[in-house]
Each structure stands twice: as structure tokens, then as C-alpha cells.
Image 1 (spheres, rainbow, N blue to C red):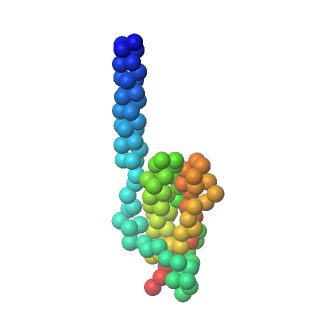
Image 2: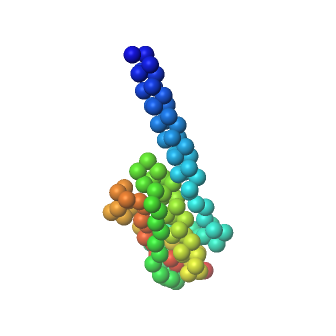
Image 3: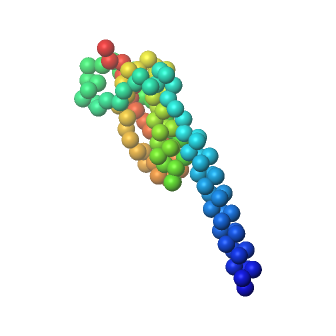
Length: 115
């Protein structure tokens, strides 16, 4: 019996090792914003009332479940990058679409240029 018990312990240890490696890999997939996107600021609707509306922007990430924080950051960085392409200085982000927890991160927002 001891041999069988050791084998199960080895399998559990191997599975834990694989899980840890996958976790490290997936967290390393988090993106960083571009230099242009890093200058964009998130604002409320009230803060951008006198700013020029440039368009709607989206951001998404396939990371979800236990990786939702990294997925949220990826989606937000993509949204900021898309706003930067429009020349935005600020974005109003609508957080957590209906599919937020299910199959990834989807963010929508509005891009504005404030002077």
C-alpha cells in the first residue's frame, strides 16, 4: 500500500507543479500600456462634460476565472491603447459587461479630448 500511496502523492505534487507553472505563465501574459496610453486618465461623465467626444472604445482579454485581475488589466490597457489612437486624453469606462466573469474581460468606454 505504501507504494501506491507514494505514487498518488507524486501525482498530486506533479499536478501542483504544473498548476504553478501555468499560473506564472498566465500572469506573465499581462500587458503593459503603451507610452501614449499611459498618459490617458480615467474620468467620470461629469468630469468630461466640456471635453470633445472622440468615439467609443473597447478592450478585451481572454483571461478570466482566477486570472480575472490580469484579464481586467489587459482589457483596460487595450481600451486605453484604442483611446490613444483616437487622440484621447481621458476615458469614461463602463466596467464589467455581462460576460465579465464568464468567458473573459470585455470593457467599453468613451474617449474624450480635454484641453
